[in-house]
Image 1 (tube, rainbow, N blue to C red):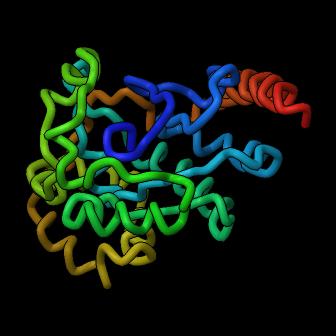
Image 2: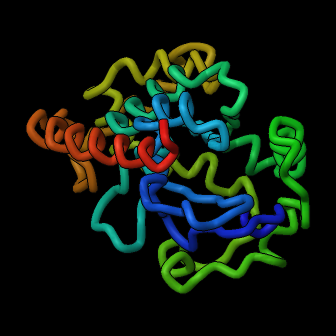
Image 3: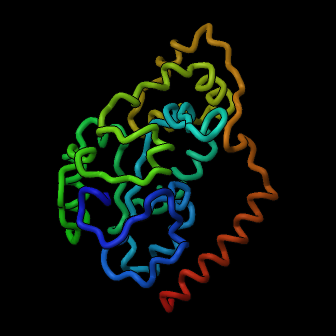
Length: 235
């Protein structure tokens, strides 16, 4: 977004919406995936807030790794929390949901969809040319293992992590319903590839459990952050 559209400011890495860009006038782009859980009250009162949500095959999400983190980066519990929040935003005129797989296979068509949904955006370069113009910071380059062109190579990489996928499916059987809801599978026949696979538990950035105390503490922090955000708006 920051490389291919005309923007005033953008975050160089993940940057929470609660960190202030209030002094900047123009188009500001930020990214923090789990922020979507906290967006419903913000988008209701902030007429200048526009949200692009990327939905991705949960099997790919639970199999994703990060260079700086031992084990896996996320799990189905976090994916589901974000997905549930996205349903609350569905239908809002300033909310757009796209599939990661569509972005990876046909980036220019997705860029056109974004432009049509948010016509104030001015295109500078095509998404397919992203790698020719992007200038990410060192932190982003390290995290992403270098600057790469948009491609579909990672869509089926979860096939290389079947013990992890099977463990998450057994822990969260509702994952199958989500695969069918979003059109990733028409039925459960894909699970045949898991036959004979031994499920394994791996280290992960997030716990599979709900961690009620941490959840309560986070809700309290977000409550006050939301109040400060709305106060800045005069809402």
